[in-house]
Image (cartoon, rainbow, N blue to C red; front, side):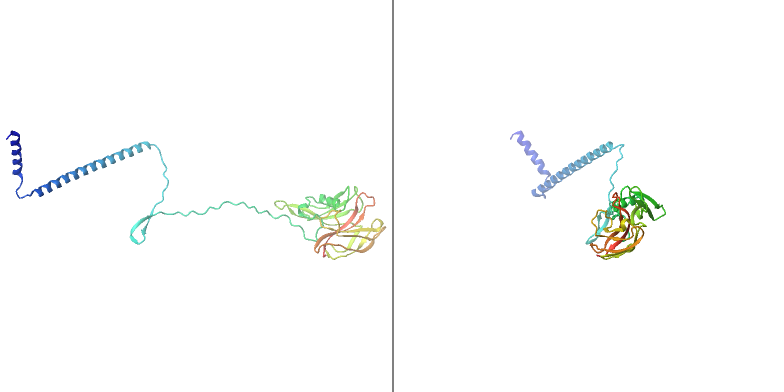
Length: 314
């Protein structure tokens, strides 16, 4: 037997002496396996603990660096809603976060009033003769009377003189005569309505006109009449002739008349006249009845006139 073999035998014999006789080989093996597992578990736990410590250290360093970067900077954090708690449905003992809601009142956009204020209202039918629309009413009574004499009566080279007017007078009287001025002028009566943005202005219109050479007693001013219209009065005119015409309110002297005729009065002194004038117009039409003396010189169409407002009954 060699020396090596002898040494192996002695070692085996020595280990055999330490084994308890009562412990079977399976128990010894089981104990050794359990010990080995415990050692592996301990080593694994130690490794996990070391890894966790490393993660914590890295996170701490990162936080410190971020804090250093933000030194001296004041940051405004957005406000956050404070959660309230409410019991979970079906589990009264459990509290769950509930986000508080804020109700915002609807905003109302400013609006611009686009309503157009009403304009001047025309006078009632049978109370005026010219112009027809308030938009054509005049700002000055004298000029309005002059335009009436020119447009409706056909006068030329009109002289217009205010007889009565003023800030405290609601009406105006303006004498008009053609051909640079004549005797027995036509007196134009005017009234006004409020005008302008604040209503402080005046818009003038013609209510009637008259001459002392032609006085009308029938029909009355503002009367509703039927065709034929009965005419009566007194007059003094060239060759005793008084021309009669029925025109729409606001018309010019060249407008086609609703009706026309003539009556005979006095030629050298005042004398009565009478007659009728037929017309054709819709019922309720406002109109003006003009009785006039023609201009014998031929310069103007009318020398003087009496004009009254009427309403045609159809």
